[in-house]
Image 1 (cartoon, one colour):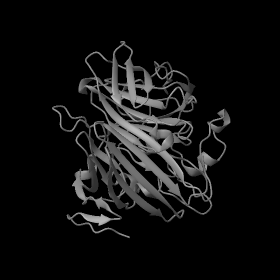
Image 2 (cartoon, rainbow, N blue to C red):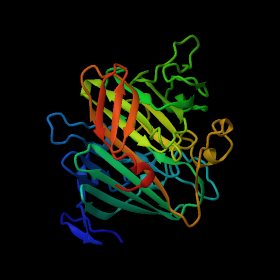
Image 3 (tube, one colour):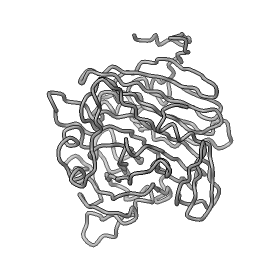
Image 4 (cartoon, rainbow, N blue to C red):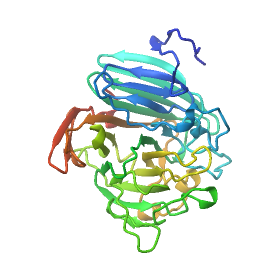
Length: 402
């Protein structure tokens, strides 16, 4: 059923359906509470703008919004680019340039560029949830997106339920953060890694006016020591962003397995000049890697035109951004024992749970050293010994419930 796009609120299965509003030049569904406001594009289900600490003197707006949204509509190289912003769920994740079993998926799947239908906003206790769904056509199935806010928290809880897809598929989240102009001003940290690898192929093609700085196919274990492409060049420090202006690079970080006592896998981006850190929490048994897309004005074809400065922190199970065919085939990661697809069983929906949020930091916090987990609470410990705690119901990653 297609919902009416009127300004009036209607009812669906007892839940309020939010009116469609314009947010950063695109029709969006809006979810909010006192702390956080979330816009989700009707086309593509892409999440942004998002405002954390919305009723304070210094709200936080961490997500990237592509600069061409305000420009006259033109044909895009891929549907995902029409609304490109913030975070979105990808299935199949990656470029998908090859057909598989007679199916040719667009980059990151049809769900990132097609219309989602609102199933309403529900409220239960201190939790408010917006539910959207999409029926896929290239591979017949359904994806249901539930985004939840908890009163008193600056956190977005995401749950994607995948039905009808059967077999091995790469999938994951594509969170994209806006970057300041000051080089190295954002500090990146992660839970323990097995290793990292630079995209083995040519990620940025100079023939298409794209340029990369990192050595293709390099394997490394330290985020601060990543080989560059030119002989004799100093290693790149990927814990400091943005870097290498004029280049666009891709790496994949493979997470170590986490026990039930050690807590979720995590990534943080500390924005010292803005006074906050952004964090993502996940179950590494479902999303075993993090792809970093470092887009620092390195693409000069349309619609990029050398102006995008953003950082993709993409929690996935996939083979880089190569898509379905490459992720299913033997590849450089699978040969290292790393799964690059998720098995979606017949007749059983698969849930992917994910948490993103923001915490305010004091002066001198610098980068995150480690993260501690207690029931309903997360504490970020800095390399300078400072500690900040924030309420997060991280058990949601395993239970899917709040």
